Image (tube, rainbow, N blue to C red):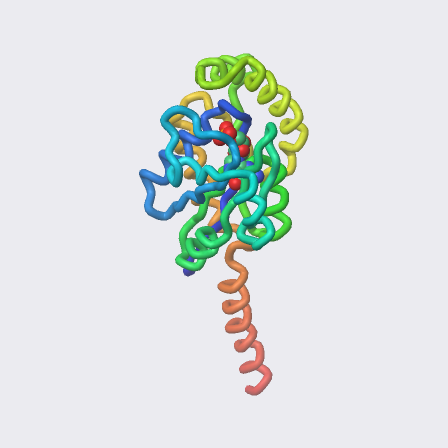
Length: 213
Ligand code: 5GP
């Protein structure tokens, strides 16, 4: 059975550690490719253009929207974020499992367009732990932290729309669980439609041969 690349969406509240998780997967396993988003937010200390994000102006972002250069985009805490189309299509064509680390509005748009996408939400062990991790980052103002916590409460309403939820308590364990889920996702019937169809057609020939005999 030839395995096709799958489209994977990883979401999670700000500060939950989903970025670290996804980077680990991509470094460890060749099968994964990570989509780099475009955003109008400013780089945080240590972030590089073209590595964490493509950092662009609002005008440039809107130009991309107009040219249909994005698979999806959303506004999050006052900034635009979007997934450039070309790279994702290229990687999927090469059979890679392409990971989109995006928030829930974008995730729902992708799910509509690509019904086979696998959606995973990364949760913190508790609300108190999430707040601690966000504060620990020390790159955000108090107002930004509060905004992100309010946003987490709102996003939590949509969790049932995801296929899987995992808890990021122990990073190693969480990474293993995520990889396990993504490996298993290859084996659902909806990811293997063409193989099933082909096999079914072959099997039907047996019936026809009996009819002839
Ligand atoms: P941050 O500013 O913390 O890097 O990201 C804020 C949120 O935007 C995160 O939830 C992240 O997953 C989401 N995000 C990053 N890139 C994209 C994107 O291309 N599209 C959408 N819809 N959300 C994104």
